[in-house]
Image 1 (cartoon, helix red, strand yellow):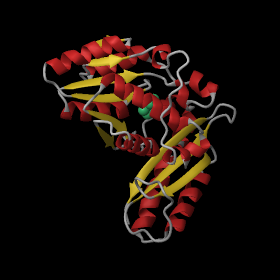
Image 2: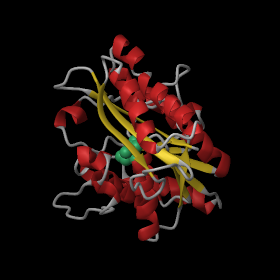
Image 3: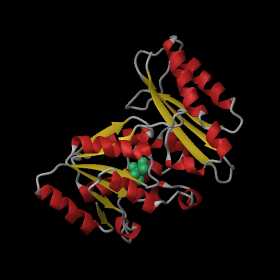
Image 4: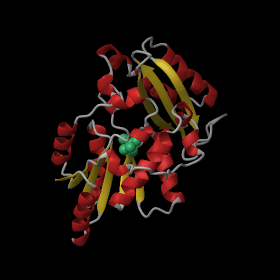
Length: 285
Ligand code: PAF
């Protein structure tokens, strides 16, 4: 695996793959890799001769400097996992190269970035769209792989790629879960043991929502069931329940006519430095 720390190095590596006629799949990450990231790598490997990964803790998508500072950084372990998974090249860029001095260009999906989770974290999806555009331009892959866990992020990236005529496929991959149902996340390592055990309430609430949907209850009752389940867990602080139409993220109301997406944001731990967990599921009537 080629470990590249500059844009010119990764471009040279990818030019070599292209010269051999190989297709390239991209997996962008912020490191602290887990089985969820490896599922993206495996999907990319199935479809492409070469897989390129990036590790970059992107400062522009963090509102709170404390959240940025406490984001886990585990480069040696990350590199070992990527190597074992058969990744061909990884880019670990310097923030000063990604954001050149006096840069002024941003990318924003003006509606999708500013609803739901984007209201709680202003500027977050603008930071994501901007850095992902840069990483696409640097690596120019045939396809890029993103987890469905951050459902809004996936919709933002799909819309951005479509609107800006980016010549690649955006592929969403289902959430990978711990045996008890907790969605894998780089943030899980920051949970205390008690909070870790309590955090299973997110997937339990989503299971309950699917059961209610199967019984044909209206969407407001599904919303109620989600809130009741999460509020019954004393360690969990519910921040948002969003029930939306897939793709447009417009609020879903009334009776279900087809699949709907549920997005949960729940906080654990100290209120001055909380761990915000998200989970999502598309449920069917
Ligand atoms: O999902 C992530 O890890 C990040 O938001 C991404 C897509 C790598 C952009 O920094």
